[in-house]
Amino acid sequence: MKIKIQKHPQYGEASIVIDCDENDQSITHIVELLEESSIDFIGKKEDKKYVFQAKDVYYIESIEDQCFLYTKDDVFDCKYRLYEVENKHSSFIRVNKNTVVNYKKIKVFKSSINGRLDATLNNGDRIEISRTYVGPLKNLLGGQAQ
Image (cartoon, rainbow, N blue to C red):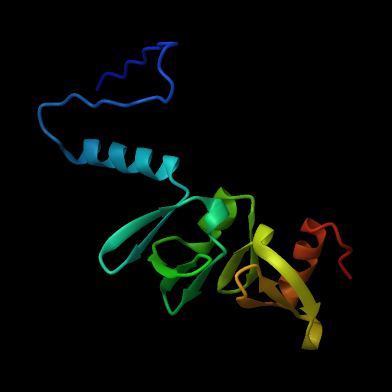
């Protein structure tokens, strides 16, 4: 496989063209990698795929081996592992065993029982932050962990 990069100052956004005699597995894999790197999140609902930027995702939750992506007004199936989201997007932080939250979407949080916090997001959804993750969240938001 040859890779050729041509720079043209008159072009704005880069484009990629793959010339091949047939579409084999390696080409399909390359296309998937390119699509994933240019898109923050993909959600699926009713056999349709939707593309989201990280700023539009409020949180991602894993329930019984199924993952759900929550936006302001809707919920989508997704294929992400929570640790992948944490590692890929700096605006997402783990808040309990099953949930990562876009901390920029937290409107208010208050203390709850047993050292936990309850966070209310800008869309009105409420998330429980377990004791294990309270300290890192407070540090991220500029508060003091206790």
